[in-house]
Image (cartoon, rainbow, N blue to C red):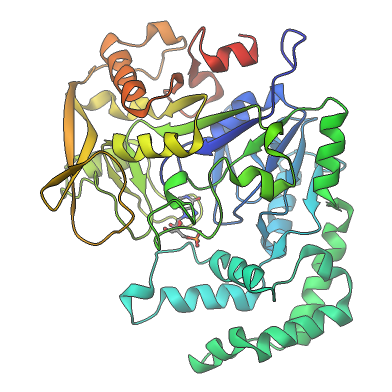
Length: 443
Ligand code: IMP
């Protein structure tokens, strides 16, 4: 709460290809909320939060976990890996974060089983390069596929070991098992999988609930909720560069189905962007700087420590893609945006922003549906600021050239820049006075 006025329910959504620093933004503002809820994705996410000299990473648990007293929800639109979730809960408990009576897991979320993860790895290791997306191999795609095809297993289904074994056997007898056997893989027998999954259920059961009903009750009782997105808009199943996408709805629109909440309950949408672009996995990235040792791509990667939180993979890096960002804003209607990792650009004499793509000699101001053919970015170049911003603690103290850069992003994207990140710590997020975000937080 701030100044006696309740902050509205706000969605925090990635505007690029994930890894924009959503976890950090959620951690920063979560003290103003009663609840933080994840609505899509699963252990493919990796949200890092730095508190003091300790860096914490969460994959399935919402980043609100680091604020004692804030309730955290893993919603029905997510996919849950029970084994990894239990590991995460153990680590959080050992680090001193209490989860009793504040973590709630949807009984309707779908469960990632070992054979579904095996299927993910199978596609990724396929001899056919067209079948490889560069996924995190956490079983995300096959689990959402099972959900859509109506043979998936939900958290509630883990409670009955006899029915569970039957369902898993049906999966093994059906297309999932066939695909594995055809590839020469031997999936584990249903009985063992069911026994383990049921034991995991017993551990998670105190947290399992009908989270849609809980959230609606809490909101009716005056609580406010922060909706924490994972991945980013350009990885959205419908609106990303298909097929190089994740298997869920990563945009603000995903909140309602993923949590069981009406659209009118979303009071605002906050887009999170990096000051440049990064992407892991395959697929188009028009502004990628693949310019070798010492080049822009490598400098961004090293300065931004651009290695995957979940997989450790080096991320592809390049200049800010204003075309993709404008597209993300069109379909999310951000109330404001946060630009993180601005300090990574401190060392560059000039900085660039793509304002259009050239596709087959024609200029296009938006994202085309097809990934066939080259997309040449048309860049605008701006002066860099050439000074260390990491010690800055107030928006107005940012160098003028940095503010000009943010101002240009604002114009191109079409949404107000309300926060700039100049480092990983809580104090290094600079909220712009008078902005939409500052007004909501009563700052
Ligand atoms: P999946 O979500 O594991 O199926 O992977 C599909 C695509 O989304 C791949 O390009 C992944 O690298 C990407 N992806 C999935 N989760 C994240 C994330 O949290 N950050 C960045 N990229 C991600």
